[in-house]
Length: 306
Image (cartoon, rainbow, N blue to C red; front, side, top):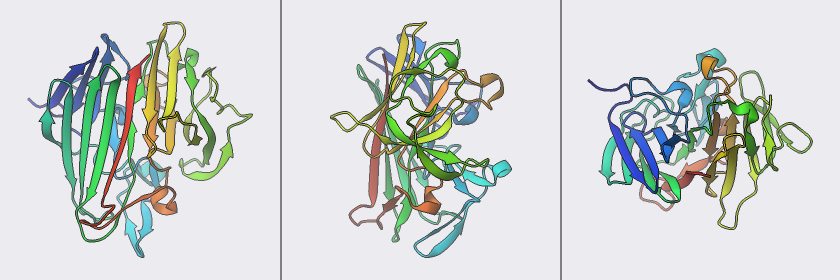
């Protein structure tokens, strides 16, 4: 029998344990000292609501699945038909191939073949590495064809610091600006967070705030990382998600429309580009033709318990 998420690759190190899946090269389990720091899913289940999945070669949504690149119009399949959008890339449900595994690392790859709507072949690699500093995830894309290709990267972990729901959790999010969206979750503009219920630059309890929001203008550490902290004061637990400089955006989602999973965990999604970047071009990566400088793009993010 094969699990819905395919082969399972368990790694451990520094007090952490993770399980990575063949399906989508995703993260099904991440624990520290036996306690989950991501809300995963059971072995006999499919990844719910994007849990732990990699969002490639674009995160979030493309309006109508239609965009232009290099003077040519392209039409993607509408993977979010209710909103008439193409959502979260092309590799979430693909079978990724194991490259190498050690006790504390595992790497997988997937060759995204040229297809209708995305006529480029791109090799994708993901490396999961556990240490005393937590989990580091490095994603690399390499263009394999003779023409430039559009690309953006995202991931969809749901963070958890207890089973009491997000309302009492504290969020620290070093972002000065966020996007406004329409009822299809397509950006309509941007606004400063100052003076709004989206301002979490100082630690603040989520309360009843509903978020499915892309944030940018991120403050960074001396190492160039942006850090998002989620704490549960009642449980004395916390988790930190960091993003390198390639990630200029982060989507935060309280999951209010997830039925019995609503507001039970907090999705914090590192993204190199905002929603609809294939249409707007904002922060979109252009992979150079194969063999030329710039034909590869690599980015890292990670998680650690507090």
